Amino acid sequence: MLQKTLSVWLCFSLCTIAYAQDTFLVKGAVFNANTLLPIDGASISGSDLFSITSSSGHFTFKNVKQGVYSLTVSSMGYTPKVVSIDVCPELKELVIYLEESTTNLDEVELHGKSKKGNSWKPLWYPLMFLKNF
Image (cartoon, rainbow, N blue to C red; front, side, top):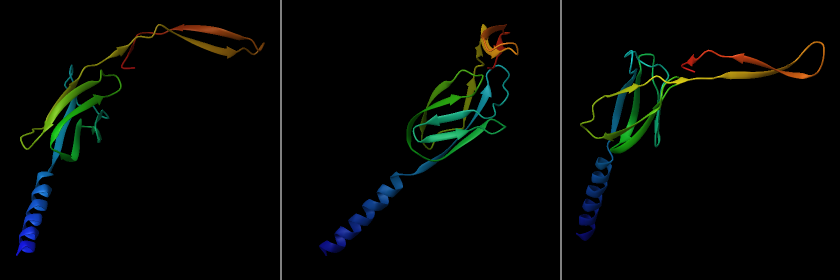
């Protein structure tokens, strides 16, 4: 009798543990904060999570366990953004907006050899302000 009771208790415990480890599907999209256009190729990463946005700006994480996650969203030409999400049954689709960033370069120094000699001479080229570099 004791053995049957222990077997039933063990089975119930294992079923409860398996049920407690439900996983969720996390969906979202990344957009340009100024133009509201989707951002293709943005990376979304967190602890054990990684995705790249599609041409429509959408991404998906499958089999995510319930809990709080910190995600870093980045794309070339945009300021990276860190968002915190609480994965639970009530989680709705995420919508993330990235701000455009600019990097200004003052000059680039190029070294090369001339046909008349082997000496290195710097060549200075001022660059225009580069946007989305």
